[in-house]
Amino acid sequence: MMSLATPMAAQSPTSPTEDRRFAVGLVAGASQFDLSGTGTTAIVGARFETRLRRWLLAEAALSTFRPEEQSDPRVRYTVPELQLQLQAPGRLVRPYLGVGGGWVLASDDRPSRGTMSGAGGVRVPLAGARIALRAELRVRGIGRNFSGSTAEWLGGLAYRF
Image (cartoon, rainbow, N blue to C red; front, side):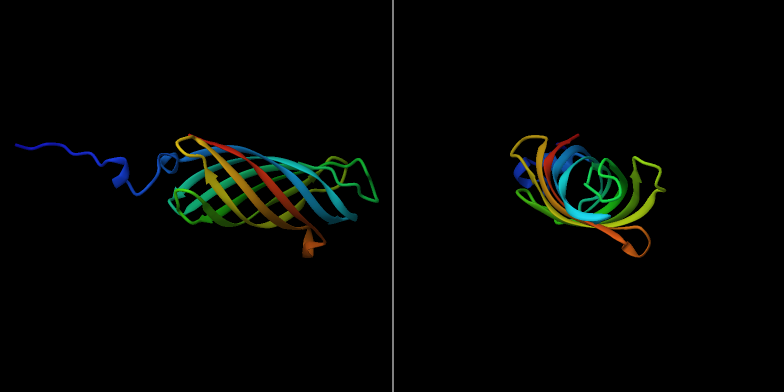
């Protein structure tokens, strides 16, 4: 006689939140900038990520900040970008490193500029929930020869589905 067996949760190599393939999140923090002037300003952003492998994620990000520049203190920057992130699988803490690129779009008449970014952070799934905490440092070079740069210190929440 044949019977069907299903693995128990303790036998599963992944947690329930790790089995969820997608996540959306919001982040906020401080951006240290070196553009047409230097300083620190608030930054907010949205993230959408998909798990390609247990250890590899693709992330689409959209951030915005408003530095006080010498040339125009009212300009707002919007940064759409894509990143690939290597993540250490784990139940309690998931550190990651990412690399990516995108565009920096200014609210005035300036042309858009390319950007390359690197990120290091950690995701912390909350026990038995679809919610995860996130902390990250994202550094970026902006424009040809990286004539501008930012260091973005971010924290936020993500919802996994």
